[in-house]
Picture 1: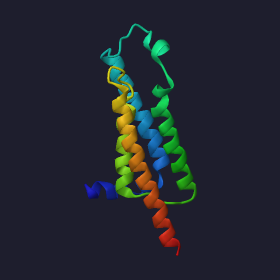
Picture 2: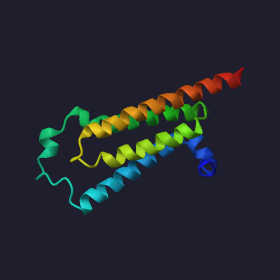
Picture 3: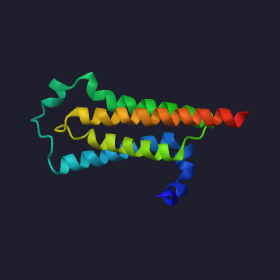
Length: 136
């Protein structure tokens, strides 16, 4: 497992902003293809207009928050933690994939978003602490 992480060390530590968007859009597209192919979520076209609330947009807003802060870290040339970045990237992919399945309760997706924010906070904290110690 560490050999795989070592192989992708540079993108995971320095390019998380791009990887965040690629994982979100890639797995979102994959989920849409699966939903369309197997005709999951046939709700006669009324669910989006009637039941759509601001809570349904939380996955998209969270990805934008992750992307924005990772862009700031990239501009500041702050490297992220390799293992935490890999875990966070896999959580983002899982969130994007699950977001397409409306039959699943949205609470499952929101649970993984909560875990993703915890991992993201740990990654951000370690990145900033390692930068401060390397500056001195």
